[in-house]
Every structure is written in C-alpha cells, then in structure tokens.
Length: 629
Image (cartoon, rainbow, N blue to C red; front, side, top):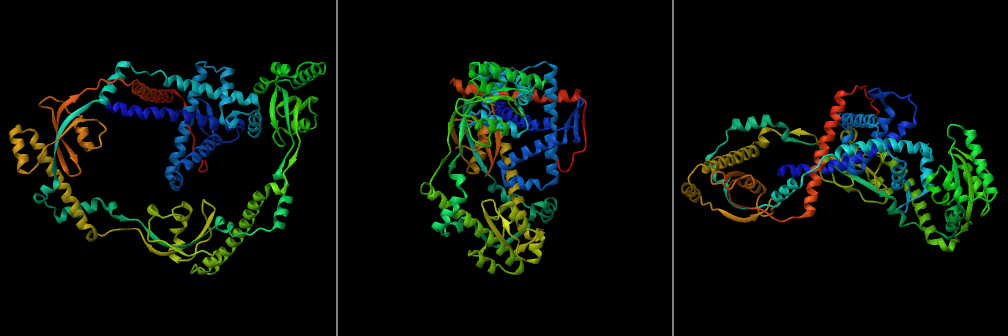
C-alpha cells in the first residue's frame, strides 16, 4: 500500500504535466490549421491527416522547451541521431493521441460555451499586459498569427472541447475516505527495532580471488575500464563588457547620438479610442450595410457605447463600450490606425475596412507627442554611446583576432596581445568534466575536433552564450582507450574480494535467523557484535540506514516473522522488529493530498488505457518521417 503512495505522487505530477502537454500541442496545432494541405502527411488517424508542418511546429515548441529546461545537456543529446529519431516519433505519437481524443469528443457531442472560451482568452498570459487582459495586445497577436477573432475562438473551442474530455476521463477516479485514512496511518506509523551490523571485513580472510576470476571479470566488464578522451587547452577570451568600462565619450558624441536617435526619447502621440467591429461573415456587402446603418444612428445621436455593446463582434471591448484603451503607432491595422489618428477628440470616423472587418471608430482622448531634452537623459545616452562604441571595438578586435589566429596558427601570443587578455590554460579534462567556459557545447565540439587535436592549430572565433568570444588551441591530448588488465588487476581483485566478503557476511547473517535466540546471541558475541536499539523509527529516518528501515517496515511483529537481513555499506545487518506503533493522528491536509495523488495516478492509468483502447480500434497509418521534421 505504501508503494501506491509513491506511485500516486508520480501520478499527480504526471497529470499536471499531461495538461501542460495538451496545452502545448493545442497551441502548436493552431499553426497547422492555418496552412493549406499541400505539405505531406506524416500520419493519418481514421482518415484525419497529421501534416508535416504540424509535427514540425510541435517539434520546434518541444525542442525550445527542452533546451530552456536542460540547456547544454539537451544540446548534446541532439547530436545523437537515434535519440532525436525517437524524440520525433514520441511527438508524433502524442499528436496521434490528441487527434483520437478530438475525434472522440466530437463523436460524444461535447461542447464548450462562449462564456468559457471568453474567460479562457482573458486568462491567457499571451494577451495580458501588467497582469491584465489587453485588447490591443490581443488583436496584435492575432494579426501577427494571421487570425481573426472569430477564427481564433473556433480554434479555442476545438482545443477546449478536447481538454474537456481528457479532464473528464481523469476526473472519474476517486479514493475512498477509509482508503486514504489507512494509507495515512501506514505512512505515519513508527516501529521499535534493533539491528546488529555484521562487517564484511571480518570475512575477508576467509575468501580469495584467483587470477582467472580477475581475468574473467575484466573481459566481461571491459566497458568499465574505458577512459574517455581528454584534452588540455590554452585559450583567450574577450567580452564586450570588458571593453565598455574603458570607453570615453565626448560631448559631441552625446549630442550626435541624441540627434540621431531622438525617436527613443520621444513619447509619440497616443490616442484612446473605442470601436464597433462588424465582421465580414458570409456576406461582406451585408456587413458593410450594417456598419453604415450604425453610423447613421450615431449621426442621429445614438450612444456609441450602447451600440458597441449590442453589435460589436469584438466582445471583449464591447463590454466597455468598445473602449480599446491607449495605443500608439504600429499597433493597430494600418487602415484603423490612419483613421484613428486623423480624428479629433470626440469625433467618429466613417466606416473603415480592415482585414478583421468593418469598423466605426470614436476617439475619446489624445496624448500629444512629448520630447525629453538631452539634459534629462544624458546618463542614458552616455551608456548607449559607450555600448555602441564597445560593440564596434569588440567587432573590430574580433576580426583582428580571427585573422591573426588563422595567419599564425601555432601559438596564441598575438591573439592575446590584440585582445589585451592573458592566455588561460586548463588541465586535462573529458567532455563530462570540462571547466567553464569550455563546458559550453560549441566550445567542446571544437576542442575535441580532429583538426585541432591532430594539427594543433588555433581554432576560429567561437561565440559563447554570454557575449564573449574565445580562441583556443589544444595543448595536450589523451585518446580514448581501454586500460590493460595489468593496470586494473589490483583494483578488480580488491573489488571481487569485497563482493565475496560481503556475500559471506550476508550468508552468515542469514544463517542466524533459523537459530534459537541463545545460540544466535552466542554467535554474535563470538564476533564481538552487539545489538543497537531504536524506538519510534519513522519511514523517513535520517539516523538509521534506509535499507535497515525498509527491512524493518517489511516485517511482522510475530515471533517467527520479526527477523530479516539487510544489505548495508559495511556488509550485512540482522534486523529485528520489536513493536509497531499505529498513528491515530488525523491530518486533513495530508489526507487530501493522498486522495489527490492516488486519484491522479488512477486517472493517469485510465487515460492511458483509454488511448490504447482508441488506438486498437482506430485506423492509424504512419508514413516515413522526414529527416528535417
């Protein structure tokens, strides 16, 4: 039952990860809906094709997430073609599962209301500014994605319907109150135990290892005695940060930069506007007539806010009378922006056509352009000039370093002189224990390249992640090899002796279990071994070895079932259970956690079983994956 607690914990997180994966693929799938069907399918599920572009977008999303989470470790995995092939295939399997769930949700007639879609969009961080939904950002993001609000809502409806089914399946599992309480009691149970440690060292004189055994172990475990290739390097680094501190800036340079970049210190004109959006729908001319009719009502004195609430297809701004808050240039569609910035405060535009539909725009307020004087931003300008000059200096030095490293490939002296930096050195290291900044994947690739190892020439310029560059050369090299038997025979002999001695200790300790208590105690006394007593030992205990605790919690207090043997670092341990203490504590928070974990684990199992069942009944066809997918 305790094993179920552990598995339940894993299931809880698996459930959370599953929801995130579904969200990722939901958004990844959006791009595929926008493309035509000219790209090749990589799989078909009951006649529904999964296209190469959809898989590629999912691959890029998952790759970016893995690189962000694991850094260089994942970059190294990417060089393994077999790993990446499995990586792509796993992504395709996820998309197949997603498609099956989507089809099942449709067949079951599941629906998502407009209000649920609206609340989900309002909560999406992609459309928020300062933690709140921003309609400008919402429309801008949709425009960049080539989507109209109605189209995006349709995609959200499809994705949320699919997730509705997933959550319904996983939410069907439950845990009884008694079951959770029993698990809590077991988890909080403590035990009185005693143990005696039997050192393997006492049995070393009774065991021996032959030369043949050493040789056999060596041949069977050759890979254990492989040594990785190692290099020692000399290298020179240069960073833009090192240069920026030594850059002087004149007043003339400050003025010149300020004049050339005045737009950075100018608050451009902004307007606050409200709009009424009439989407094209199936009949564009009808939509235009509706917009013109609303314009006439406005001209006759109708309330703009009321008409927006009643008629605008932009339901989010409509709730606020069509208000779009403040915006500047290059935020709205060009036609919308041109019309809005041409209006005076309080004016209403004629009907304006954009890619989203027909708009009526009312400017409710205006912020004029403002310019900061040089004196107000002098420190900011100085820093920008320093960075600009440092960047140019950095680029110039980089070119010089690259040229000298190529023209004088047998040393780094001139490269170091140009950079104004010392030549640094490393000891021999393998790929697994490379020091900083050598540990970056791009540097390791060049450091262990055949060209630098064999020809002992300078590398080209290597760009690092933190705005540095580096030039290196191999100073020493040890190739990968397998140690000879004579090099490791003593080590093998010692290891085998230790293994045999520990096994002898375990066998001897096992023999004590069947003895009478008096005879057992006599045997222990002859070896100078004594019992150690511990009371109220919990499952998670820092004082007693985990193997002893695990053994004690597997025993029964019955006289013929209260002894067992545990393997410990010193050799063996004879463990005796004396008494069990049941906990009567009722921790409601812990009970809730146990119920949630177990329900999550059961839900994950049910979901996986459902996917497998759907796959078994589905017509699924896989096509050959492109190497670039």
